[in-house]
Image (cartoon, rainbow, N blue to C red; front, side, top):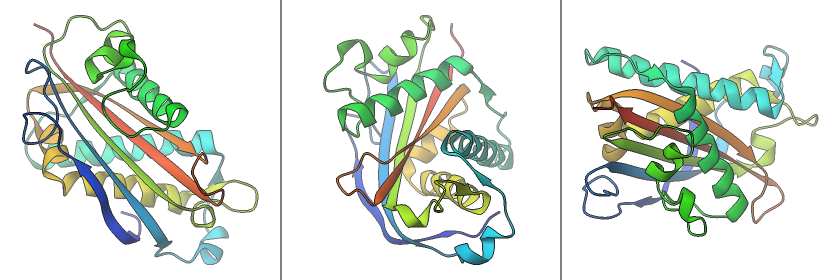
Amino acid sequence: MSAPIKLSLVIISIFLLGNSEYGIMENNHISSINFDFKLSELSSNKSRLNSQNNSFNLKDASERIETGIFSGIQSERAKRGLPEFTHDNRLARAAEIHNIEMVKFKFFSHIHPRNKKLQTPKHRVETTGLMEMTVVGENIAKIYGARELFVDDKNMILKSTIDSLADQFVNQWLNSRGHFQNIINPDYVFTGISCYISDQTPRKDEMVFYATQVFMTKPQ
């Protein structure tokens, strides 16, 4: 595991929506929760690490964070004797759509405020062609902080930073009851994960990393 990221404010807001104790429920078909937090500094020394690790552009960094999250989630399932998730590209696409929409329309929620066709996790999954389903779950999170914490002067992200971000997403979800319940739910067998990196923040010197994980049970 990589060195942990040091947080100045771990939890900014957790939204518990609807009549579920860990998220929103839509006719008992959706369970979701979201989470965001801000970074003040990385525990690693960037100048020292710069000569020891490869750097990646934002697109490649996003994919590597997704891989790191998926690996961490699989490890947690294995520890508990649960079957590993089967990755589904359509669920990953639904997660990607939501990340892009949250950035585009400047919201952070499971409910899209402006597009009824993408309004809920269920709607977003359906846009990918997955029409037959029983239960769909969604975890969302974002990490943001000063741009200099994440990228170098060439707009590249260090591998050590990528690993730390992936670990932080996983650890914060595991330490939040709602996220955790989705992750260890034995009924969920399929998942898709998306990470999206944006500099569209109120402050020009900040960056924000969005992570969305979508879960689905076997269709009946």
